[in-house]
Length: 444
Ligand SMILES: *Cc1c(COP(=O)(O)O)cnc(C)c1O
Image (tube, rainbow, N blue to C red):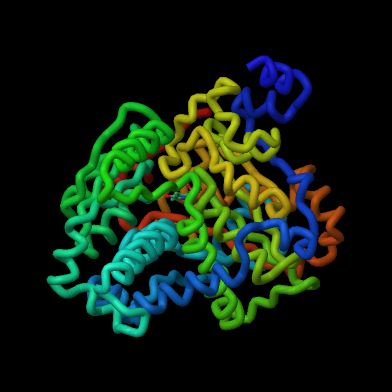
């Protein structure tokens, strides 16, 4: 801990983080994509593989979840312009945002109503395919709708899936695992909302509740799973599968951007803002976006001031060797999806040469931005998801990001830029909870 004391003495940003001030961090280790590309253990071929697997499972998904029929069993969200919100942030928050502002509505992804419908569901399907192929239940050339038949469900009922979660990952893994036929145990941290636990139990999922934070729920889940040879543990902190499930979003975005006539190239930079918890979702999406758009895309994470675990890990270089509690923060936040005290070391390492930077945000603003986007665009997002608005609101006016734009020769291109706020959750929030959120005001 002495080393941490010393860092706090010499690092002004850490001191400000300790005092729960909002900060903006520009990643000094970011390199050109050409230089970064070869340093990662994962490649575009891995994303292609994940995309093809999701395609193989599409008939099965369509059969289990009729709401996905419209998209042929592909779980994907819309990308929409939010011009009224753009006007509002420029007036209300004096943001001076010049380019086009878009919302990626993973909040409305089918089945799980959050970004976790990408990674979580993909990992369950990957495991399912491995089990089914190894046990002669399935050939790769089969129509995977077959997996919904009773004999297959009986086979999967012998197996258990377990996961630690602050809420949304549990919902995505729980709902999909129950659909395949597995027994499911979700280990929920103290942050998890009651309605998420209730919803899971209604799907027949066993929910174990902890009084401790996310890391403790993960630790216990992993331990219980390791003791059972028929159990598979979804490891949010280290899973390459989850990460690749998230990364597929980038390939799908190519067509959506083209459709909306949003150019992305050297003269038309794309800025993307994603809320970050343990790092898997924003990390996977960023990894995919960099593979697809290279240096033309600039990705920023946003974390709560009480739980800036990825910022702490990346900016100190200690990755998962430091927790927010180590600098005296609580890790407690209204942003339940982001309530993580220790980041994924795997994601931090992959992000080192790719991520542009990070913003932190006070909890009170989550509710303000939530009301803003509801009032201007009639889209309901959960508070965690609204963290992403901190990016476009601060980008063109804060000294740190202005310097970033200057250094990257981006200043003159901002009129031609586009900004994507990655809305990570919200559509499953029950009406009475929405009402509660709409009336939540936090004095800070
Ligand atoms: C999980 C989650 C995130 C962040 O994902 P991580 O993989 O934990 O970084 C962001 N927003 C919402 C709503 C989430 O549920």
